[in-house]
Structure formats: structure tokens, C-alpha cells
Image 1 (cartoon, rainbow, N blue to C red):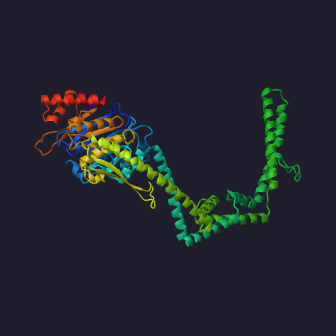
Image 2: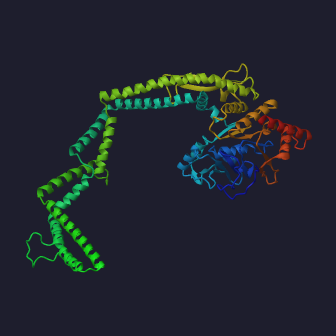
Image 3: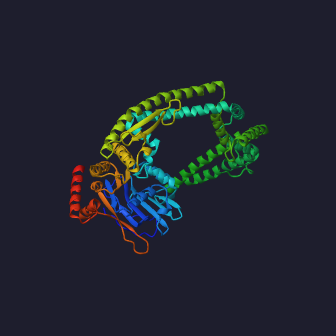
Amino acid sequence: MPARATTPDALPAPLADGGSGPLQEGLAELRIRGLGAIDDVTLELGTGLTVVTGETGAGKTMVVTGLTLLFGGRADPGRVRANGRAGVEGRLLLPPDSPVWQRAADAGADPDEDGSLILARTVSAEGRSRAFLGGRAVPVGVVAELAENLLAVHGQTDQLRLSRPAEQRRALDRYAGPAHLASLERYREAHERWRTASAELDRRRTQARELAQAADVLRHGLEEIAAASPEPGEDDALATQVKRLGDADALRAAADEARMALVGDVTGDLGAEEAPQDATAALAIAGRALSSSDDPTLVLLSQDLADAVAVVSDVAGQLAGYVADLDADPARLAEVQERRSLITGLVRKYAEPGEGLAGVLAWAADAERRLSELDVSDEALDRLAAIRDEARADVDRLGAEISAGRRAAAEGFAAEVGKELAGLAMKSARVSFSVDSHPDDPGPEGIDQVALLLAAHPGAPARPVHKGASGGELSRVMLAIEVVFAGADPVPVMVFDEVDAGVGGQAAGEIGRRLARLARRHQVVVVTHLAQVAAFADTHLVVDKSPDTGAGVTATDIRAVEGEDRVRELARMLSGLADSDTGQAHARELLVVAADARA
């Protein structure tokens, strides 16, 4: 795929559409602006192995620097060009089930229109840095967190994963296999139970007096609430009862008046002249007038009136029942008011403003839970100690099992890495693991301190790998480990910065072969100065540095080469002369050898 220069006004800005090709997961595009010697270029990256080559000092490592910066690396203002601002932007393609999507959504990021995820980072000459994810400004730490599942950079000065003992232990655990990892997960759960129970037991023992006092307060509140036995919604019901009892006379008068208007004086207390005409009588007169006709419309209307009489009679009956149930007893009113006062007191003491009786009941439920945590009785402490001891027994048993698994895996792992190193110009190097167990001090990842050791040559002592290897050796050790784990590492993008330093001849070809093997399952980007490595590339990018214009400013361009252009670049790497017939013949031979090896 071609690399093309762009001239955006500012970053972050949208990348050009397309460019992903057959890539299913990884970095589809990378744009770098104002970084080191690079003015403004956009690279379209494909699947497989991409190599970056160019003259010394042209700015090849700025590609790696840009990637590192994009994924949360340290911002170095010294890399920013004179225009005062540098920016890197990338387009990520991710499968729907990638955990990156959930973390991005948590940060407020949105996918782009084509379903990709856009990352961006800007750095000013003063050192101010900003990160963007899916169109949203985010803390740099969020992008760095995503990078743990996306990118692994292995270079002369960036061997963080390999130098950390925790990463070395994780590598050994992965090599030990799924059953070992399942045991490790059970160990973590047991360790958490043991740690939690131990801390809680210590807390209760050292704070027994304070906890007992707090428990007394909770217990008193629970007893007060239990004595009142409030029911959910009782406060609202009592308020309704108080209003009804207080207004009983007025309510009775209103109900009687309404009932009389509907059905008349059913008690006979009023004379015929005093009683008003009621609704049922009026409806009956109207019904009789209509029923005497045989007109179909009037007959239907008379039936509607009959239904109305039934409804009115039913309402009158309900009013009579309401009046009969209406209690005007002052003693009952006082009783309800007293109960309401009791409930109101509980609400005032135990509920937040506006919560009402529901807040009292919620406080009681929470108090029951907290009271169980404050129990400092001998029985409670004995139960907690039993839980602690049972969890510690699981920790000891599983810790020993995991330690044995690590020791068994260490020999095979070291042997396989050693075989790979033999083909990487490190035949005499010996890799081993130190597994130092501390069963009396179990940690969250087991009882072992794991260290990857390297003896770089015969007679050299085995030392921690980041101390016993040079930059180039460290890169090759990391490459050997990645090859051993090819297909198992979940990181989709791997970057290697001059892992071939100090290597030549057949060993250089072996490095290319191993990188191509990694690229079957990962997107691999390699900065290299060796034609034997570059010949294995699926995509070959060349970094060109323009001559000084006289203003003291140089610029770098990055272009993709194919066909004869690629042959010329390989010839330049081999002999220093792009137009050398011998160099070009050798370059073509390298391409054929690499193609055969890949096939």
C-alpha cells in the first residue's frame, strides 16, 4: 500500500478514508506530524510484516517514537519541530469482541463512521501533551491502559515488558498452559479470601472497644424500630386517617348531601315539600316518556337512561357505606395521632430528609448488615478465624501446586527460547528462570519470585536479563520469546526497533524468517538496517531525508516501495549503491530466498 504525504491544518483531524485492506485487527493508518525530522506523513499499514528502512539519520526511529507516543508513551518536547507542535494519529481496526471497545466506551469514545477507533496525541514544544480517543479528550493514562492489550514495542531502549519481573512471571505462567492458569485463578480467589478475612479479624480484635460501642448504637436503634413495628407506607396511611377523622363531620355532610341529590330522602325525615327532586326520579320520568314511544332511536335512548339509573343507584349505595364507616370518635383520632407522632420521630432520627418511613426501614436493613460486621463476640471471632484458616490452607495448597508448575515449565521454556536464540547469532547464550519460593509470605500471584536470567556467553554468570544483555541482545531475547509464544500473545501489534543490531550474514536471515513467522498471526512493524530482514516484508516503507534547504530545516518523507524500487532500496542496504548491478542481483536473490522461506 502506498504511503502518502498529507498537509492537515491541525491535529487531531480525521484520517483519510480507506487504507485498511485485508487487515482485520491492528493499525490501519498512522499519521505523524512535526516529530523529529518528519514534517507531515501518513502511512497506510497492512497485514503481516511491515519493514521501515532508510539511511542512518533519516528518521526511521521516529516511526517507532510516533507509535510509542500515540499509545501513551512519554512525551519528549525535544522531539518537537520548530513549528512548536507535534501530533500523531492512528486508525485502529478491532474485532467486535475486543475488550478495548468497552474501555473506550467507558471513556466516552465513539467509533468512527467505518467502525474503526481513532487515537490521537499532540505535544507542544513546552511539553504539554493531550490525548484523544474516539473524538474525546481523555487522560493519557487511558490510552496507555488500552496499549497493554494492543501494542508491544521492543527496541534498543524500550524493553519494559521483558525487564519487569511481573511480565517474566506472566510469560512463564502462560507457557505452563491452561490448567496452570486455572489453578492460578483459584489461588488468586483464595488469596483474596484469606487477605480479607485476616484484615477483618485484625480490625475487630484491635478495635474491639470502638466496634462494641458502635454495635450498641446500632442495636439500640434496631430495638427502637422493632418496638414500633412500622409497616411500609404506614406514614402515608396515618396521614390520610388523621385528615379523615379530623374532617369527619364535614365529610359526612358532603356525602349525605350528594346521596340525597342522587336518590332523595331515603330516611323520611324530610317532608315531601322539603325534599328536593332527586336524580333517580328525574331519570325515571325521562325514561317513562321515552319508553312509551316505539321509535327505535328513542327506545335505545331509554335503555341508556335505565343504565344511568343503575349507575346513580350504585354511587348512592357507596356513599351510604362511606358515611356508615366514617369514624368521628375523638379517642380514635387521638390514637392515630399518637401513632403518627411515633413514626414521625423514627423518621426524624433514622431517615434522610425526604425519605420518610422508607428511609427508616432502609436504615434498619443496613444496620442489621453492619451489626454483623461489628460483632466482636468470641463466637463471631472464632467463625472469622475459621474462614481465615480455611482460606490460608487453600493458599498454601494452591501456592505449592503453582510453584511446582512454574518450575516444571521453566526448563522447557528456557530450552525453546535458547533454540530460537541459537538462530539469532546468540548460540552461546543460555536462558534460564530463577524461581525463588517464599511459602511464608504468599502474594496475590503466588509464593514465587520469578526472574528471567541470561548468560550471554560461556563463563558469564547468569544475570537478570535486562542487566546481563546489551540493547541488541535484549531485543533478540524478546524476539525469541515472542516467537515461542506466537499465536498465544493477545497483543495484535508488535513493533521491533533495530533488533538486528550487530547481526549479519545467516543470522540476519534467521531474524527475518522469525519476524515473518510472527507476522502470520500479528501485525508486525520492524525498523531495520539489514536487507536480509527487509526482504521478508509484506510492506516495505523507505524513509528519505531531503537535503538541507539552506534555512537549517530538513524534512523526512516516507514512501512504500515495490518492484524495481524495492530492489534498488535493498541494493542500497547491501552495498551502499542503489544502482549497483551486483547489489541489485543480490537483492533479487534475497527476495527469491525470502519468498521460498515464507512459502
